[in-house]
Length: 156
Figure 1: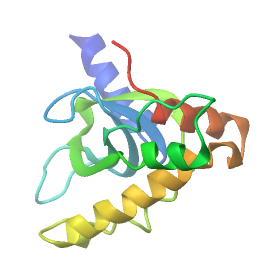
Figure 2: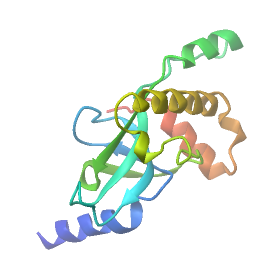
Figure 3: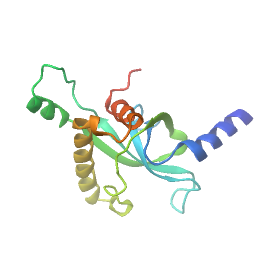
Figure 4: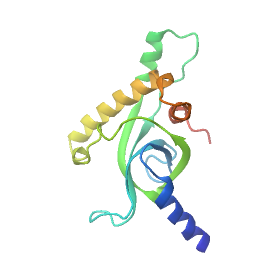
């Protein structure tokens, strides 16, 4: 039991940071990849446990082959469907990948209720599509690898 407690403390503190690609382990989006936007380590009045705000892909882009035209590739990338939610830190699996998407500006915490959440998802969809179509324009090779991993379907 001490190893489990140590592992949970380790995940809580160091690994789950903004920009990190994680895999959701529980709930509706279990098995989906997401990017951490904000990490709340000690919890707050609403949620008394450490949690993080994540934005991820509920439905990924369709398969693209080399022979497809640019127009068809763009059309197939439009099938992406994003999600935004707060997740308990124990329900995410951090990966080794980082992504250089600036999602803090797109997702304002006050907008996550009611009709405003729809607008947030629309802006997220636009950001994800742009990043998917321009993956090679990453700031570093490490971030490019993270972006590539984020948009691939999880095989398990």
